[in-house]
Image (cartoon, rainbow, N blue to C red; front, side, top):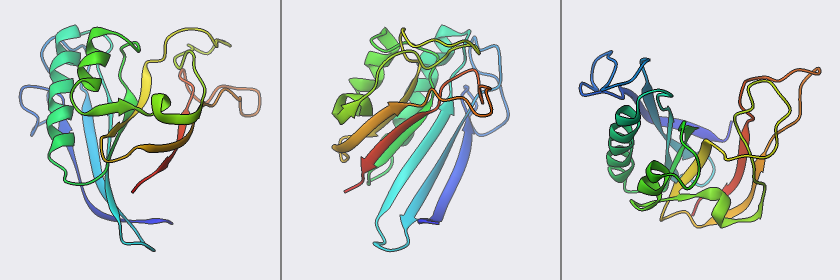
Length: 170
């Protein structure tokens, strides 16, 4: 209700991003979807990119990150990049993302939760996250970052905990 969709698109995380394809050493088809959203009240816009990187192919994750970074850099506005990155915080590929213009929102948050985000339908709290909310350098104000560990009707809604970031888009 807060935003109008201005533009959007999807590309495949592969050597041929404009057509349905599996990339490099990936096991599965993987995509990246982006949208430009405009706040109905303030008319401010931001780009939101969401992805799910391959869980098997290291080369596929590396090359996919390059495609995502290229897309995020193509926007001249605030950018939020979310997804299941299938790589732990502090890993070589995580560091590649954060060394190239994106910041982990949990590091900017005034209040930040930490711990595992992929739990495999078990109650797990400790461990490294593999799901992230990254922000480009235009966004610096994050009120909170939380890993939602509550179950619904006694069941997990996914094999990953949802993550939430309260972000002020300037």
